[in-house]
Length: 379
Image (cartoon, rainbow, N blue to C red):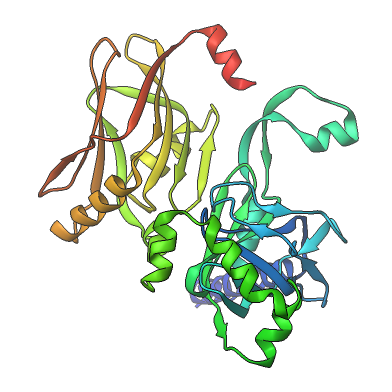
């Protein structure tokens, strides 16, 4: 009887503890503050102009303003338009209210999107490792030596694309997607006219549209004339596949950086717990299609090398991953990196349990890293 009572009491206490943890986390993600700002970007050759409203809305009613009055076309992977205004420390936003003009479509869009607060909170709370000067120590202690330390994201970046597509990332030294949202088109009429007045005089609109179109590439102009402007390209970037990296010989990864076509990127410097970070790429996990990859590896003879893929060809990579997934939907994809014994040549193969695709268009480089070179890479 006593044993049963102890077990029941233990279950009750465990349940209460878990319940308290959940309540504490809920309170934290709604109230805990981080130092971040809102910023925005748009794809190359598909310019956008943000107008009012343009803010992340916090639970206390405060608005974290996103820069507006700017012609944006730097690319999702490029520098976002940003500024620091108002509070530096802010809670995780509850929603995003934004309106914008798409030049290639000559249309306005708007949206009011609920943000996944817990997901953003977890990302900001966990942060990531980085080798460099710890800015907090620099400010408070004057300590300016480079060291391995933890940082967190410094911005929530809004990426706009044609057809009202909106993507939000947590941005910093690493960049992770928060989610994809869909804006609604503002039909021609009083509301659209009012929006245009935020950009220019209403009478200037036909002239401005014509002048903008003259700046577009011939490919984009053809898309406009044929009515083929679409968000498909950017939705293809966001497709995730179960894939991993492997080698034809025994190599130990001691540092890496990876970028993806969906604008995400992350990397980890050398650390005692390197194995757990390497799992992100050497174990089969769902990830977007990579656009660039730096692998710092140590061979069995102790020599350190850098395998650098400066750029994967966009069309080749996107189509190859699609073909592999179609050929065997339930199997994972392996990126096999073949390096010869002298570390002079490298080729890359994508494969599953059905087919293999040799990548012909990616740009690769191999480096032998001595101590001096390794120090330079830390700069």
